[in-house]
Image (cartoon, rainbow, N blue to C red; front, side):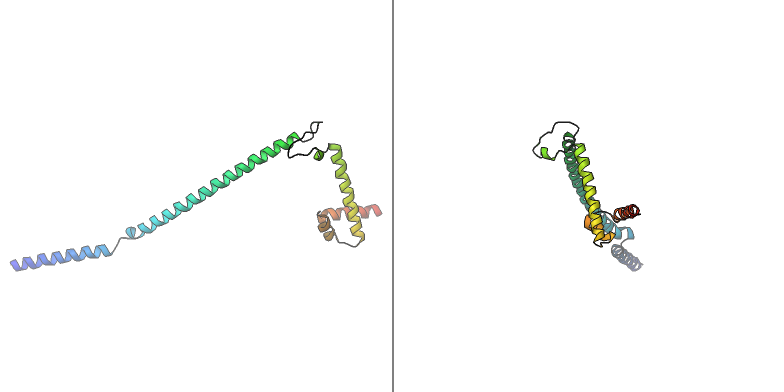
Length: 154
């Protein structure tokens, strides 16, 4: 009977060791994917930090650009023609200041020259598309002026 008890005890020890060895080889699904999930989370955190750093840099750049634009706006407001005196600045030449009347005259003379140029190019046989490319204006503006010319001729 003692032999039987020793044999049962030895079998139980063998079964216990076998089960323990088997358990260490077979991981639970949670343990198996836990390390993968952790590495993915670490990688995600790195990417998120990099993106946040990039965004902060871009925000800083845009803030600097806005400051420069605000300074330029203030500078332009100084020289907007509201005062009758011509002001001088390091970056601003007094020759560049034009009164409203002078501006209107220059703008209208440019329009007249543009329309004369359209007429010249039409007489040379250019198409509306070619004229628009040549003068840097829209095709619809060329077509409109052509229609006005046709109505004048009638």
